[in-house]
Length: 76
Image: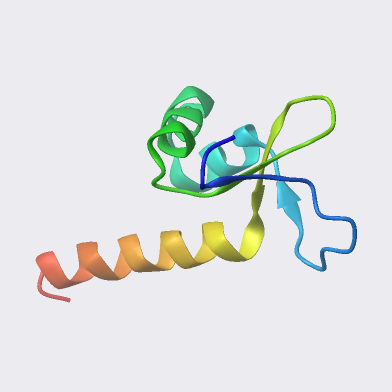
C-alpha cells in the first residue's frame, strides 16, 4: 500500500468515483487515471475487492487547479 492509496473508509461523507468517471471529467482514458494514481498525482482508495476509487472532492479540486492553470497560460 502506497502513501496515496488507502483502504475504503467506513464513514466517508465524500462520494467515491470510479476511474471511468474520473476519466470522463478530465477527458482522458481510464488507464491514464490509474497511472496518475500509481504515480501519486491523485489519491485513491482501494475497495475490499481491490478496485480503485477516487474522492470526488479531491478530483474536483485537481480539475479546478488544472483549469485555472490553463486559464492563466492562455491569458484569461
